[in-house]
Image (cartoon, rainbow, N blue to C red; front, side, top):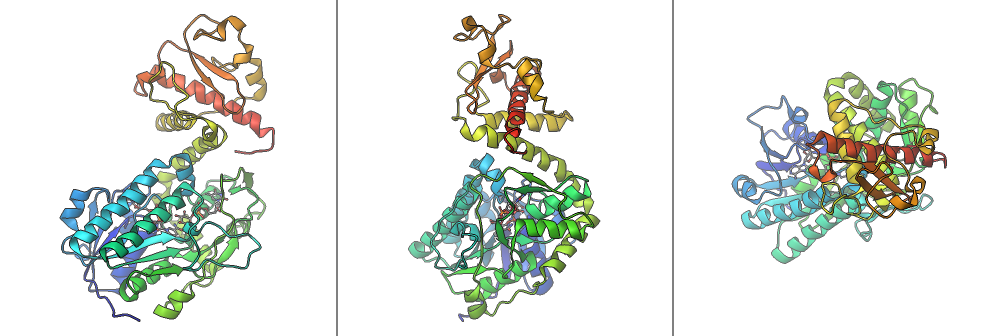
Length: 473
Ligand code: NAD
Ligand code: TDX
């Protein structure tokens, strides 16, 4: 074991998120001589409530972006170490819109490494087991530090990229760094977009939980407090330039976890909805944490998953005021993503506009824009029946095939008014909206918003059609 590092002033990036805030509590509770500066942008996933009540002489919150090099120049000097948790962390969001993941996870890590290089501070990089891709369900193997990188999702590929930057900067510039790759965390303060809190809060709301695919995918669950103690051990005792895998032998498939939640909440264990699978869904993660245990003597304290899950359920029941503000927006995002899965992933970027320029670039953008707007003003986007869709009784959006041939080539719809046109990539039909206002006038214009609304309404109808083929959204 190498010399013990005893930091006095540390920066914790993402310290208002789920796992970062748990680490801040862990440090305050267990290491009285350490001051923590939390650097957090407070995205939708960051909540200052997560660290509220901690002593102000021990914890300071700086609201800012890890991509802001000038800010890093101001705050990094005077600190001994950076523990880097900040990230865009949700796979489903990364599939719908990868760009913020590139920026925060890749560019953000680059900026931090440059600051580490400049000011000579110790750096610990918090990563995920997802960088290794997935294992087969029937494969007895687990990930080790030697497993080749093989990320599957936009999220995990950006985390893998950030790990590569850390390794390259360490070797080239001789930085004092460590990396940890941890498995799926659970516990209090996890955002309601994630599997366990989403299902608990759905059940509280009387909504049936949503299980992706066949529910056979395996995750290796670890309580977030065990993740925190492991990161502290690696920060203070880890060998420079090394990677440590963190896991607590908690493999369970999703359907088992969901049935445990339902039973613990007094519901029928079969009372859930099967929904369409996540595209590219990783099958199984499993961590071999032998190196961490052998070299640094770390052991998980929470080995009773059923007990930890029950305590987590109790926390969400008792802390509705914490999660309630994020719940509706999260479910609205899931509805938008459902449309994206059907249409957006097939739509060539930029096909959709009316006059050559526009704010709307793809089906995903349309879906997102309308759901966000509808969510903001209290409207609901309601699917119409398939019968109405085929009868053409569903408003101004109609399939091109029903148009007289004279209108097919131009930008004129059957009523003689100018039309907005797009091709549905799944069905190969043209969709028209009889509009005077053009989409490129932007969302600030209510008429343009109406145009968008109609286009998405049509997308919702198409989803209804697709439901006939057995896919549920
Ligand atoms: P989270 O989404 O709950 O929190 C992320 C935090 O980072 C938020 O407070 C957010 O405001 C902040 N943030 C985002 N972009 C930022 C930016 N540009 N500048 C500053 N702050 C920014 O995430 P989490 O689940 O707590 O995950 C934390 C870390 O742990 C991530 O790096 C993630 O990849 C890793 N990890 C998570 C898990 C898991 O199961 N959740 C498992 C292994 C590793
Ligand atoms: O509604 C759902 N239904 C469902 O079946 C949701 C939200 C998820 N799932 C499935 C997908 C996964 O197999 O549950 C499993 C867990 O899903 P998430 O909570 O989204 O986590 P996962 O994709 O496994 O990634 C998590 O662990 C690794 C974190 O979000 C990452 O940040 C971390 O790197």
